[in-house]
Length: 538
Ligand code: AMP
Image (cartoon, rainbow, N blue to C red; front, side, top):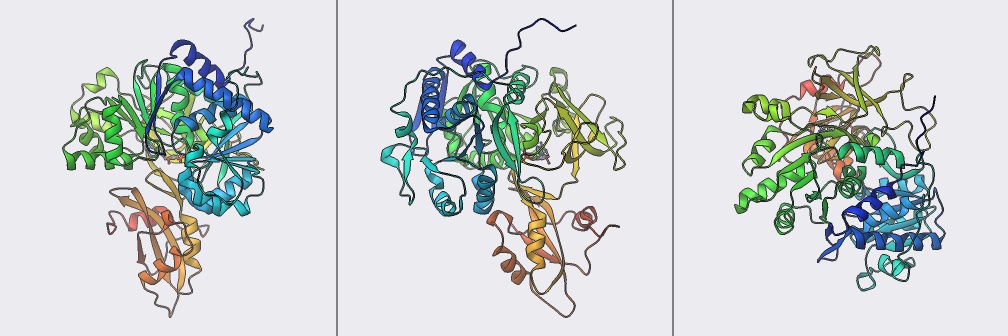
């Protein structure tokens, strides 16, 4: 027997509707790319979102069309999120940090029709423009007075929306319609597109809004440092309007000084970002003697939280909460919100608990499996390949020709983890062959391939080693060809010429032989053991 409830679609515009209905005076504050602070309310924002929706429809943007955005966290990108998705089109967020080659590939692969970009990225976009196959129109995310010089015809965002009406009736459509697209290079090979649906993001929003998960409440002031150009800024553009929190967008100012200033002037209560950002802020606070009088918690994810960070922020009375997720998981999978009981544990035990990646959100299932596919026990000791399933977890990559999930419907994360009896998951290793530097991925294969082009290199293996600022940086390990004697400097210069700057190895080391597994693949686990404790030149 079927239930007799209304079958209404879960669409992101419903979140906006809720925010405007209940929290219309709540503010969105931005440190703009142009410089000054911009502030307005959810109600003002909705009006501009509707103007943008009218402009997009008038321009011929149809449901399903991809609209590219390369931008900082600002109120304009917030408007793009809602307007593009609201008319049934797809907001393709592009990560400028991964270099021009990556940007060119993803824009062409997504077949974006229109490209919005912050003026910081004018040079990048101008460089890409001649090779973009589908982009017909470019918009700079600014006003006429700040319009950059650009070879192709260019209009500004403010000119685009100015003449439009702020009345727009949001269409209703299937909740499984795509709303956003984000490419991950968190795997080897070409970037892969993760296509989010309205349903996935609305359900994730509901789950992250629960007080037991993040404890954000109406009136809190949230500053996501985590970028809107990658993994939906951990869903904050949706969760904050849902809960009634103010949003503070830092624009391009992500250094310690800029953040500290915003924390203070805007009385930020909670912030989110990767460990590198928080290390930078701590250093700034130590240097200047400044404090964080309003900040209560920081959600740290993207890379592992460290005890040094927990202790450093504890001095300022700020709780570090760890989260874990992936682009493929929209992205939130776990949050390590300590229970009232565990907050009372002795420091040593509490730190050990906080260093775990956390417990699964509602509707996220996690399991660990062995290499033979057998499901392993959740005893906190046994480690295995971490697999997940749930409402906001990828079923397939965009335009992929083969299935992404296992035969029994799980997604393999490429992380290796243990899960304890209380449901806390802890990542212990990574089976995917990548390095994460300051929250951005580097493909070890790309570096190895570049090194192998060197006439003096017989074998090359790249591993991530600990770095005090970036968490991980690439170490290139080389076995020389017989009779050849290239120097480390020579190899560095050679590979750097062929790689995006972020991927330049921090050091080159030589071995007689690179350890290989039974199938001839480099044994990264062995290589990591060989260079355990390796100290990079800083
Ligand atoms: P991305 O798709 O760029 O968000 O990267 C997802 C990957 O980042 C995960 O599969 C993990 O390897 C890593 N990651 C994310 N959060 C954490 C965390 N809290 N601790 C350790 N690794 C993490």
